[in-house]
Length: 86
Image (cartoon, rainbow, N blue to C red; front, side):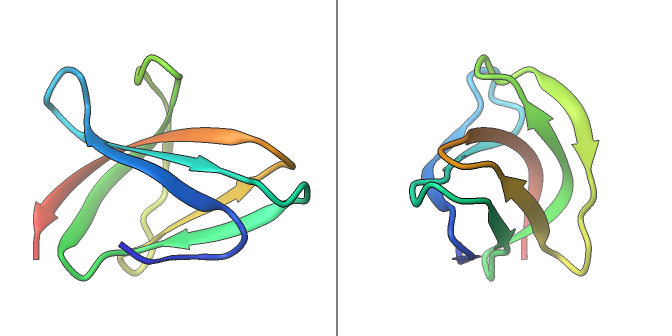
């Protein structure tokens, strides 16, 4: 799953409740990072910013099959995504 930008996907896992996929992104360079996430294997249906406990917080847009996220310096972000196989 390619991610373009300065942040790095550090974990990709099935959510603890088994309903979605969880991505954890971490900015490690000490500066604001703009990250674009897409996959040639999965189609993103819906996405949410999530808490550390993987609770859905706010829906994020899926545009042209990718997710755009901005991270603050040293920030870790948890995303929940609903996917389907391409």
